[in-house]
Image (cartoon, rainbow, N blue to C red; front, top):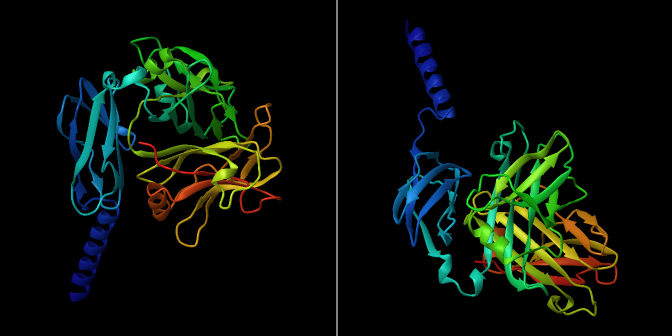
Length: 372
């Protein structure tokens, strides 16, 4: 009899453990905070989904709840303003998150045709294509709008995508401009914004001379620019994503040259480095280096913190990838930074580095500072 009671108790304990392992009895925690400076309706997004619409300033709480040790990333899509997000990414502890702070300002508050550093990220899926496409393919990526202009007065931009799950090689990857006032509508590809697909078949980057006109910049602010990836089976687009999300990523776009190497080299090569990283998961959203080093042996991101070393090697090296003698270096798709790496990023301890036989410790370098 006692054996039977013991067995019953053991089964009950095992059942309870099973429930816990399936999240049946674990505590759930909410994510929320406040938003200010809005001039219209904004959409708040948690972990790439779970949208809530915020009609003006005030407090907010997502209906989706998370478990302890889940990561969270709060982003905002606001077509009327420029927003910054504080305390919006991290890991859930044993309490609700209620200190996410979003501060927005209307674009008209910025001078010179809204010319500020602009950072936008995106997630692509077949569900966002018009009409929707059933596919397992996805992509993440982003766009960095600099304060620099080309000779025609257009604003220079950097960015790209990391593709996943495509059953067929893309026929075209480009930034499209949706009809004015209709962000979900189908538009046309912007001629100079067709992306190059790197040798790994997963990383796609904007051309070195990519730029936005003032009209296209206005469309970006209105949420009308989108990445579109076409394949042989879906020539109008297999996956798509609006370039609209603010917050949730660390970003940097920096020039490389010989003067930033310690000590400086005599090289005349130059380049540009791009880094976007998800602040919740530490996963690389998009990163690459464009450069003119002849016979480059390696490239990557190094830290000058502590003993100093390479924290992320760019395993994919391509010479003359664009036919204009520009070389490309990219990391393995899906690369992840450590928490210490992210801390070094925030404290400007990281730098892009390109090495060669003549300069094995670095021929050109670009010090990485986080953009706001």
